[in-house]
Length: 311
Image (cartoon, rainbow, N blue to C red; front, side, top):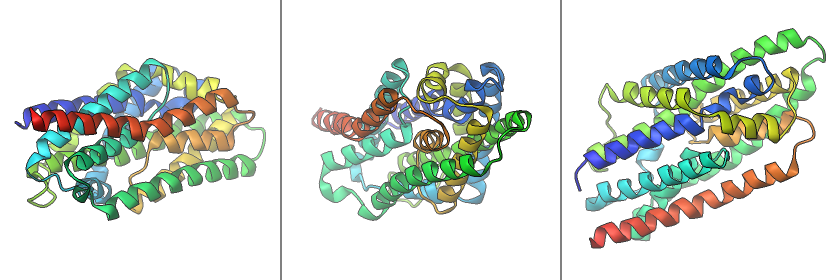
């Protein structure tokens, strides 16, 4: 299978990631009325771009973890095509219903399903364990740090918290780019080297990845913001700022440790930790969607690999 379909699908996944994941970074200031959506989206797009470029230059451990998650052998391009297609399908379906699922989670699920279709021995358990650790740790950290910030921040001073939310959203968007951008660079390295030549990405890759993500952020995201910032929990400038602080701290720690995590999961956990009176029905639907992401995307990728290899 040629490389071009993989590059096109990877571009689509990055675009959908910016479309559906990045709005989580700006959900709190938009929902609490601090920023209008167009201005917040433009800010997030710029910060996403900086996050991808800076992290690729300073600490690419997250990218290397994704790169080493499986050995696809001679079927690398077929497996990557199937994994990326499953992430695109799941991401678009989630956006249609306003559910903030994670393309990172979907991508890892797709890679896992594709590897299993080629044989269980293709999976490398150590990198997969890091992904699992990151998922659990990021959810716990996001909720705990969001709750801690919500309790420690003094009451009153809404003007200060409104300004703080802008800075918090910018930092979260930067860290989203640092996390998710690296995951896509890791997949690109797999496609280019076919998993056999050692981790390597061309110099233009970070800018291409950042540009696709920024474009996706600018063109979509309102439905996700409505779910996360308005329907799930009632946010005030103070609780929104607390959620931003908790999310940014959790993302920064996990990125420094090289753990691939989901900005969607971390931000939602931080909002639930910092907010008051969450809507149980909405939170339950998000949890169900997250639980279904891995088997759904893994199953789609598994099926596609079986079909493509036979074909």
